Image (cartoon, rainbow, N blue to C red; front, side, top):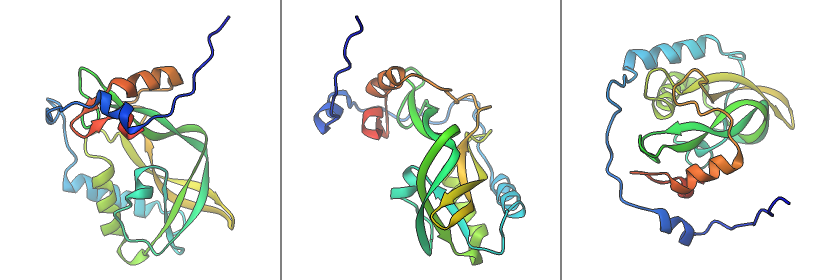
Length: 200
C-alpha cells in the first residue's frame, strides 16, 4: 500500500537548517561569456523580428522579473502563455548550487501554460531596454535562457510579447523531473547566493 504524502509548510526555520556559507568558485573553467557585440546582435535580431512593431512592446514576466523588473514600463496586465510552463529545468552549478551539488532554477519550458505579468515597454528606447534585459538574463555562451517572441492571451485578446525561454540545447537543461526529484535537489543545494529552498 503506497504511503501517504505528508503536507509540509516551508518555513524560515526549515530554510535556516540547510543554509551554509559557500564561497563563489567563479566562472566554470573554459566558460565563454557574451560580449557587447553579442548582446548588440541579439538586440538587433529581436527588434528586426518584432511581430508588432507599431504597437506597444510587451515583456512577459513569469518569475523574478515580476518582483524585480529593473526596466522602465508604462503599464501592466495579466496574461497566459499557452504552450509554455514554469519548470525547475535550469541546472545551477553556481549562485544557488555548486558543481558538486547542483541546484535548480525555474525557466520557461515547452508545454502546458503559464500565467504571468505583461509589462508595456516604452518604444522610444527599446535597444537600451533590451540590452539591459539580455545582460541580466543570460551571460554564458550558448545562452541558457533565450529571448523569444511568444503569443500571450489577455482579457483584451492575444498579444505578442518578448520573454525568455529555456534553451533545450544547453548543457544546463535538466529536462523534466518528478516533484520528488526536484524537492530533493532544492532541499540540498546551496551556493553563494543562498539555498534552493530559499529560492523556492
